[in-house]
Image (cartoon, rainbow, N blue to C red; front, top):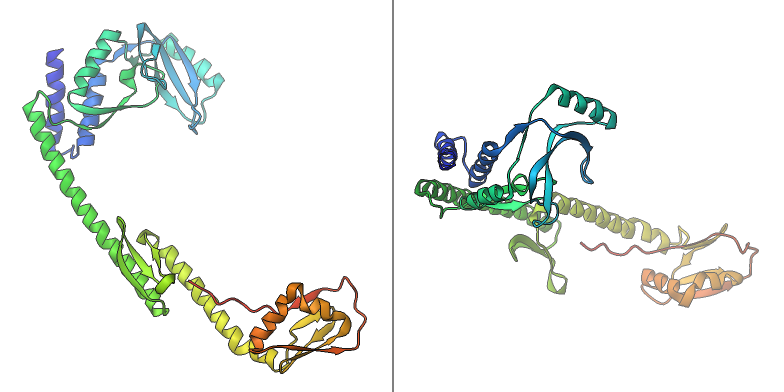
Length: 342
């Protein structure tokens, strides 16, 4: 067993020296893979079964082997004992109950071997304790022994092997430098994006500047009490689309006041309609058939306030003789668009 452990460590370190392993995660994953392969036993399965988890889109065919004795498993609880090992041997949409029944029987009859973790509880615990001296582990759900459910996260640099420790420290230093450079590139890119957005805002007449917003580089725009923060420059494209929408709405708002409003003020377009009856402005006077005045004023006189805002002074209503209009006739009132705000 000692020779096997030394061989696993040396094999992993040799892969690092060859350059095929360049991170602590890859080194830890290779180490765990080599350990598992060294303790697996080739055996004919006791049965085959179709399996498809809740979050799995493709069904699997699994081989099942009864263990010599129960061992610690990892199905939602690390203290749960399991009595069999489950190994995936095939997956695909073609796998159904009939395929598993016939194909599984054929493989068992042929004596086709599958690698299983046929370990006793003491053997498994001893191997896991040794593994934990060299790598950092985490556990995922599994229907088999715990050794088959663990996966590697990173490597330890305080192991009994000085050479392992030295190589891991080198990899960690390399990863830290790569992380630092990646963060610098990310922040530089975020600042460039933020500056592009700020420039677009300034060109649209909106005060804007680039600044730190918590842990992010963001854009502070607006002024006074209306100053707001766009804190994530990752959404540059979305922000610029919103700006284009705002500019389009602002252009429509300006067009309405420059082209449409004069027509209403000059009495060339009606400001109120009931069926076929139209009401026009004449200065600050509305000439309205007597029976339509309640409909024109609206609830609490809100619409008259709209027309007063349009004219810029108080609006007077001049009664005209009543006209026949159906109670079901459609009503249209001029609505003033709100000034768009970014």
